[in-house]
Image 1 (cartoon, protein in one colour):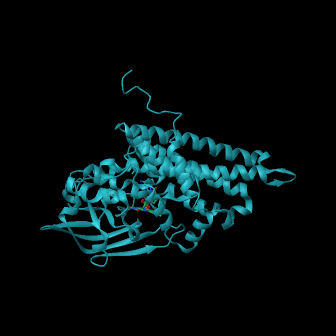
Image 2 (cartoon, rainbow, N blue to C red; image 1 turned 45 degrees about the vertical axis):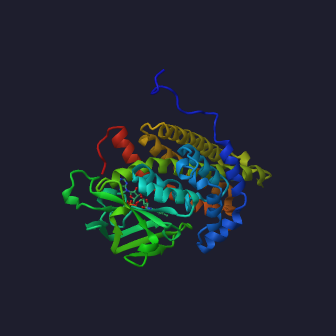
Image 3 (cartoon, rainbow, N blue to C red; image 1 turned 60 degrees about the vertical axis):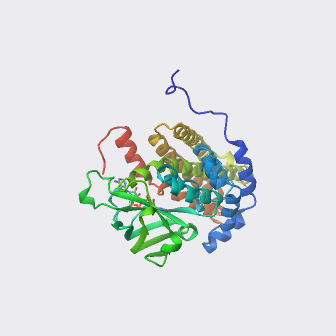
Length: 393
Ligand SMILES: Cc1cc2nc3c(=O)[nH]c(=O)nc-3n(C[C@H](O)[C@H](O)[C@H](O)COP(=O)(O)OP(=O)(O)OC[C@H]3O[C@@H](n4cnc5c(N)ncnc54)[C@H](O)[C@@H]3O)c2cc1C
């Protein structure tokens, strides 16, 4: 059997040695903690610090730079367990993977300067600036410019939905370095920069928080002649979109892990309540109208989890995994949403009560069908690039 044919998923191995300590850590952050943070729209600093101290956010950083050197499958299992425990990894998941761009495309100096400090938590690299208000999902058309002037770039433009900027030391920024009409291909002419936020905020960068339906610390960014050194550019000028795409498969797999965890949480809550709640003198779970949607969501979650594992295994084997990473994210986000919906339905009125945590998780789970990439864009990718149908946009 050639390497290409060999199965790459070990079905009976599920990172138990990682899951148990993650679950133990999460048990210290129960529903009351998250409810209070949600109400005040406060960043869960204590939770993030505990994950940092335990080394979980440095899981994917190679040991040479002070991390654990684990694969993306392990990262997905950590995030899955966080979400299955009722916690929210979205507050800090980017610290796990944003560094990948520096690791794969940064210079030796950049790697030495940043990665050990990201691994220890001394530097927080968990802000990722891509989306813009005017161009949205059409990333290659983004308009924020970084114009070279001697040993500096001058950045002008606007970003939206850039999360955790106020809780980060570094922002990975995608900006245009060659005007659109001077590039041959859509993805060219964009570059990636590692912006030191302490020096930038108030000196050309303005951050305006956006209050959303979830507690997510997200912001609008305004760049007005922000000067950054040429040494802050990662890799070659004009190749930034390719670098960002490289990291997106890892991001999709990790976020899919979070969705699987959410689905597990909802299904556990729903099936437990369905067994306990008695109406018309029998448990509501004895009714197929309640039981089947939960069973359906369970099957969806299990199938999505298999796709997450396949995508992770391909990624770790350095094999192409774009379709699998995208399908993992699509299926996992849909499974968590199906589980969220039936969990609310199973709980009837109590699904709306804050103290059950379901309404909060319900709001949080909805995000993943929109961000970091919306479901439609994944379907368009599959339709065009996997199935060879005409470009639909
Ligand atoms: C809470 C939150 C946090 C976020 N954090 C970050 C972050 O840290 N960094 C960052 O860069 N971005 C972030 N985002 C942005 C996120 O990635 C985008 O919201 C998402 O990619 C969708 O882009 P958009 O909002 O501009 O929607 P649009 O591109 O305006 O699309 C709107 C709707 O139209 C659909 N649509 C658009 N074009 C097509 C088409 N051709 N075919 C079919 N359907 C189409 C989309 O699927 C979507 O449903 C965040 C968003 C949210 C809500």
